[in-house]
Amino acid sequence: MAEDWVPAGVDVSRPSAARVYDYFLGGAHNFAVDRQLAEQIEAMTPNIAETMRSNRVFLRRAVRFLVEQGVRQFLDIGSGIPTAGNVHEIALEAAPDSKIVYVDVDPVAVEHSRAILAGTANTAVILADARDVERILAEAGKLLDFDQPVAVLLAGVVHFIPDSDDPAATIKALRDAVPAGSYLLVSHATADGQPAEVIEAQRLSGRTATEITLRPAAEIEAYFEGFELAEPGLVFIPLWRPDPQDAADEHPERIGAYAGVGKKK
Image 1: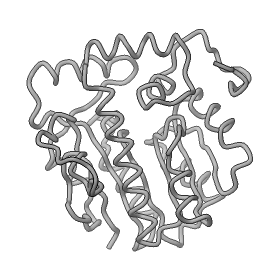
Image 2: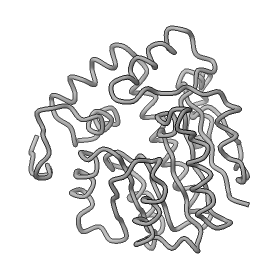
Image 3: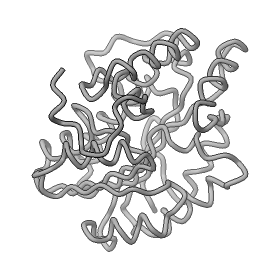
Protein backbone atom coordinates (compact mmCIF):
# COMPACT_ATOMS: atom_id res chain seq x y z
CA MET A 1 0.00 0.00 0.00
CA ALA A 2 1.24 3.48 -0.82
CA GLU A 3 2.27 5.46 2.22
CA ASP A 4 2.12 8.98 0.82
CA TRP A 5 -0.92 9.69 3.02
CA VAL A 6 1.10 9.18 6.23
CA PRO A 7 1.66 12.47 8.08
CA ALA A 8 5.21 13.40 9.07
CA GLY A 9 6.10 12.37 12.60
CA VAL A 10 3.70 9.40 12.82
CA ASP A 11 5.42 6.20 13.93
CA VAL A 12 4.15 3.46 11.61
CA SER A 13 6.18 0.74 13.35
CA ARG A 14 3.81 0.68 16.34
CA PRO A 15 0.10 -0.17 16.21
CA SER A 16 -2.39 2.65 16.65
CA ALA A 17 -5.82 2.16 18.20
CA ALA A 18 -7.25 4.56 15.61
CA ARG A 19 -5.75 2.58 12.70
CA VAL A 20 -6.92 -0.72 14.23
CA TYR A 21 -10.45 0.73 14.29
CA ASP A 22 -9.96 1.88 10.70
CA TYR A 23 -9.00 -1.68 9.74
CA PHE A 24 -12.12 -3.14 11.38
CA LEU A 25 -14.19 -0.66 9.40
CA GLY A 26 -12.59 -1.71 6.13
CA GLY A 27 -10.59 1.49 5.76
CA ALA A 28 -7.25 1.87 3.99
CA HIS A 29 -5.42 3.89 6.65
CA ASN A 30 -3.72 1.04 8.50
CA PHE A 31 -0.57 -1.07 8.36
CA ALA A 32 0.44 -4.70 8.91
CA VAL A 33 1.28 -3.96 12.54
CA ASP A 34 -2.26 -2.61 13.06
CA ARG A 35 -3.85 -5.57 11.30
CA GLN A 36 -1.86 -8.00 13.45
CA LEU A 37 -3.18 -6.39 16.64
CA ALA A 38 -6.71 -6.32 15.21
CA GLU A 39 -6.55 -10.05 14.55
CA GLN A 40 -5.43 -10.69 18.13
CA ILE A 41 -8.33 -8.63 19.48
CA GLU A 42 -10.77 -10.35 17.14
CA ALA A 43 -9.59 -13.77 18.33
CA MET A 44 -10.54 -12.69 21.85
CA THR A 45 -13.83 -11.03 20.87
CA PRO A 46 -15.09 -12.63 17.64
CA ASN A 47 -17.94 -10.17 17.05
CA ILE A 48 -15.96 -6.99 17.68
CA ALA A 49 -15.53 -6.13 14.00
CA GLU A 50 -19.25 -6.58 13.38
CA THR A 51 -20.02 -4.38 16.38
CA MET A 52 -17.72 -1.62 15.11
CA ARG A 53 -19.15 -1.79 11.61
CA SER A 54 -22.69 -1.74 12.97
CA ASN A 55 -21.85 1.34 15.00
CA ARG A 56 -20.48 3.11 11.91
CA VAL A 57 -23.54 2.16 9.85
CA PHE A 58 -25.74 3.61 12.62
CA LEU A 59 -23.69 6.81 12.55
CA ARG A 60 -24.21 7.15 8.80
CA ARG A 61 -27.96 6.58 9.10
CA ALA A 62 -28.15 9.06 11.96
CA VAL A 63 -26.23 11.79 10.10
CA ARG A 64 -28.62 11.44 7.15
CA PHE A 65 -31.54 11.70 9.59
CA LEU A 66 -30.03 14.80 11.20
CA VAL A 67 -29.49 16.49 7.85
CA GLU A 68 -33.14 15.78 7.04
CA GLN A 69 -34.07 17.52 10.30
CA GLY A 70 -32.23 20.62 9.09
CA VAL A 71 -28.99 20.22 11.06
CA ARG A 72 -25.98 21.72 9.33
CA GLN A 73 -23.39 21.65 12.14
CA PHE A 74 -21.77 18.50 13.50
CA LEU A 75 -19.41 18.08 16.46
CA ASP A 76 -18.05 14.53 16.33
CA ILE A 77 -16.24 13.75 19.60
CA GLY A 78 -14.08 10.62 19.68
CA SER A 79 -14.12 10.48 15.89
CA GLY A 80 -11.03 8.38 15.18
CA ILE A 81 -9.76 8.46 11.59
CA PRO A 82 -12.49 9.75 9.20
CA THR A 83 -12.58 6.69 6.94
CA ALA A 84 -14.82 6.30 3.89
CA GLY A 85 -18.44 7.16 4.52
CA ASN A 86 -17.70 9.20 7.65
CA VAL A 87 -19.63 12.21 8.93
CA HIS A 88 -18.18 14.86 6.62
CA GLU A 89 -18.78 12.79 3.47
CA ILE A 90 -22.37 11.96 4.41
CA ALA A 91 -23.23 15.47 5.58
CA LEU A 92 -21.53 17.38 2.77
CA GLU A 93 -23.06 15.14 0.11
CA ALA A 94 -26.56 15.71 1.51
CA ALA A 95 -26.04 19.37 2.42
CA PRO A 96 -22.93 21.07 0.98
CA ASP A 97 -23.22 23.94 3.47
CA SER A 98 -22.66 21.60 6.43
CA LYS A 99 -19.82 22.21 8.88
CA ILE A 100 -18.06 19.35 10.65
CA VAL A 101 -15.61 19.38 13.54
CA TYR A 102 -13.84 16.16 14.49
CA VAL A 103 -12.37 15.70 17.99
CA ASP A 104 -10.08 12.91 19.15
CA VAL A 105 -7.61 12.38 21.98
CA ASP A 106 -5.29 10.18 19.89
CA PRO A 107 -2.55 12.29 18.20
CA VAL A 108 -2.19 9.62 15.50
CA ALA A 109 -5.89 9.85 14.63
CA VAL A 110 -5.72 13.65 14.60
CA GLU A 111 -2.67 13.79 12.32
CA HIS A 112 -4.17 11.29 9.90
CA SER A 113 -7.48 13.18 9.98
CA ARG A 114 -5.83 16.48 9.15
CA ALA A 115 -4.00 14.88 6.23
CA ILE A 116 -7.19 13.27 4.90
CA LEU A 117 -9.24 16.48 5.25
CA ALA A 118 -6.64 18.83 3.77
CA GLY A 119 -8.46 20.99 1.24
CA THR A 120 -11.95 19.96 2.43
CA ALA A 121 -13.86 23.15 3.23
CA ASN A 122 -15.94 23.55 6.38
CA THR A 123 -14.11 20.85 8.33
CA ALA A 124 -11.73 21.03 11.29
CA VAL A 125 -9.91 18.58 13.56
CA ILE A 126 -9.20 19.13 17.27
CA LEU A 127 -6.83 17.21 19.54
CA ALA A 128 -8.69 16.99 22.86
CA ASP A 129 -10.01 14.60 25.46
CA ALA A 130 -13.79 14.14 25.36
CA ARG A 131 -13.92 15.27 28.98
CA ASP A 132 -12.24 18.61 28.21
CA VAL A 133 -15.46 20.28 27.15
CA GLU A 134 -14.16 23.80 27.66
CA ARG A 135 -11.30 23.27 25.21
CA ILE A 136 -13.52 21.48 22.70
CA LEU A 137 -16.08 24.27 22.69
CA ALA A 138 -13.44 26.99 22.40
CA GLU A 139 -11.76 25.34 19.42
CA ALA A 140 -14.96 24.17 17.73
CA GLY A 141 -16.39 27.69 18.06
CA LYS A 142 -13.87 28.86 15.46
CA LEU A 143 -15.94 27.03 12.83
CA LEU A 144 -19.31 26.27 14.43
CA ASP A 145 -21.92 28.83 15.49
CA PHE A 146 -23.22 27.75 18.90
CA ASP A 147 -26.19 30.09 18.55
CA GLN A 148 -27.48 27.72 15.87
CA PRO A 149 -28.40 24.02 16.28
CA VAL A 150 -25.47 21.61 16.57
CA ALA A 151 -25.50 17.82 16.48
CA VAL A 152 -23.18 16.51 19.18
CA LEU A 153 -22.04 13.02 18.16
CA LEU A 154 -20.76 10.65 20.86
CA ALA A 155 -20.56 7.41 18.89
CA GLY A 156 -18.77 4.70 20.86
CA VAL A 157 -16.93 7.10 23.16
CA VAL A 158 -18.85 7.51 26.44
CA HIS A 159 -18.13 3.93 27.49
CA PHE A 160 -14.44 4.92 27.65
CA ILE A 161 -15.23 7.52 30.36
CA PRO A 162 -15.17 5.79 33.77
CA ASP A 163 -17.82 6.45 36.39
CA SER A 164 -15.18 8.22 38.48
CA ASP A 165 -14.99 10.92 35.78
CA ASP A 166 -18.79 11.41 35.74
CA PRO A 167 -19.70 11.07 32.04
CA ALA A 168 -23.14 12.52 32.76
CA ALA A 169 -21.49 15.80 33.77
CA THR A 170 -19.55 15.90 30.48
CA ILE A 171 -22.74 15.36 28.50
CA LYS A 172 -24.60 17.97 30.57
CA ALA A 173 -21.87 20.53 29.82
CA LEU A 174 -22.22 19.81 26.10
CA ARG A 175 -26.01 20.02 26.33
CA ASP A 176 -25.83 23.37 28.09
CA ALA A 177 -23.52 24.74 25.38
CA VAL A 178 -25.90 24.14 22.46
CA PRO A 179 -29.25 25.83 21.77
CA ALA A 180 -32.72 24.32 21.60
CA GLY A 181 -33.16 22.35 18.42
CA SER A 182 -29.71 20.78 18.74
CA TYR A 183 -29.26 17.03 18.84
CA LEU A 184 -27.32 14.48 20.91
CA LEU A 185 -26.25 11.14 19.45
CA VAL A 186 -24.96 8.39 21.73
CA SER A 187 -23.97 4.78 21.06
CA HIS A 188 -22.69 2.86 24.06
CA ALA A 189 -21.55 -0.67 24.92
CA THR A 190 -23.69 -2.66 27.32
CA ALA A 191 -23.78 -5.95 29.19
CA ASP A 192 -27.55 -6.18 28.69
CA GLY A 193 -28.42 -9.44 26.95
CA GLN A 194 -24.79 -10.58 26.78
CA PRO A 195 -23.49 -13.99 27.93
CA ALA A 196 -20.80 -13.94 30.63
CA GLU A 197 -17.94 -14.89 28.28
CA VAL A 198 -18.72 -12.03 25.90
CA ILE A 199 -18.85 -9.54 28.77
CA GLU A 200 -15.47 -10.70 30.02
CA ALA A 201 -13.96 -10.52 26.53
CA GLN A 202 -15.24 -6.97 26.11
CA ARG A 203 -13.67 -5.98 29.41
CA LEU A 204 -10.33 -7.55 28.47
CA SER A 205 -10.24 -5.99 25.01
CA GLY A 206 -10.91 -2.61 26.57
CA ARG A 207 -7.75 -2.77 28.68
CA THR A 208 -5.39 -2.01 25.80
CA ALA A 209 -5.50 1.67 26.75
CA THR A 210 -8.75 2.48 28.49
CA GLU A 211 -11.15 -0.02 29.98
CA ILE A 212 -14.67 -0.03 28.57
CA THR A 213 -17.43 0.58 31.12
CA LEU A 214 -20.49 -1.45 30.16
CA ARG A 215 -23.67 0.33 31.24
CA PRO A 216 -27.36 -0.71 31.30
CA ALA A 217 -30.06 0.89 29.17
CA ALA A 218 -31.51 2.98 32.00
CA GLU A 219 -28.15 4.60 32.74
CA ILE A 220 -27.47 5.36 29.08
CA GLU A 221 -30.97 6.75 28.55
CA ALA A 222 -30.41 9.11 31.49
CA TYR A 223 -27.68 10.83 29.44
CA PHE A 224 -30.50 12.20 27.28
CA GLU A 225 -31.92 14.34 30.08
CA GLY A 226 -33.13 17.56 28.46
CA PHE A 227 -33.44 15.85 25.07
CA GLU A 228 -36.48 14.22 23.48
CA LEU A 229 -35.49 10.86 22.02
CA ALA A 230 -36.38 10.38 18.37
CA GLU A 231 -38.19 7.19 17.46
CA PRO A 232 -37.51 4.36 18.12
CA GLY A 233 -35.84 5.63 21.31
CA LEU A 234 -32.80 3.97 22.85
CA VAL A 235 -32.46 0.55 21.22
CA PHE A 236 -29.82 -2.00 20.28
CA ILE A 237 -27.86 -0.50 17.39
CA PRO A 238 -29.32 -2.64 14.54
CA LEU A 239 -32.83 -1.53 15.53
CA TRP A 240 -32.22 2.22 15.15
CA ARG A 241 -34.04 3.17 11.95
CA PRO A 242 -32.69 0.33 9.77
CA ASP A 243 -32.82 0.95 6.04
CA PRO A 244 -35.88 -0.60 4.33
CA GLN A 245 -33.68 -3.01 2.37
CA ASP A 246 -31.99 -4.31 5.54
CA ALA A 247 -32.99 -7.81 6.60
CA ALA A 248 -34.71 -8.00 9.97
CA ASP A 249 -32.20 -8.68 12.75
CA GLU A 250 -33.56 -11.42 14.99
CA HIS A 251 -30.76 -11.04 17.55
CA PRO A 252 -29.85 -7.33 17.73
CA GLU A 253 -28.50 -7.80 21.25
CA ARG A 254 -25.48 -9.66 19.86
CA ILE A 255 -23.98 -6.29 18.90
CA GLY A 256 -23.78 -5.45 22.61
CA ALA A 257 -24.45 -1.74 22.25
CA TYR A 258 -27.34 0.72 22.42
CA ALA A 259 -27.92 3.77 20.24
CA GLY A 260 -30.16 6.80 20.43
CA VAL A 261 -30.60 10.31 19.06
CA GLY A 262 -32.35 13.08 20.98
CA LYS A 263 -33.43 16.68 20.24
CA LYS A 264 -32.85 19.41 22.81
CA LYS A 265 -36.12 20.81 24.07
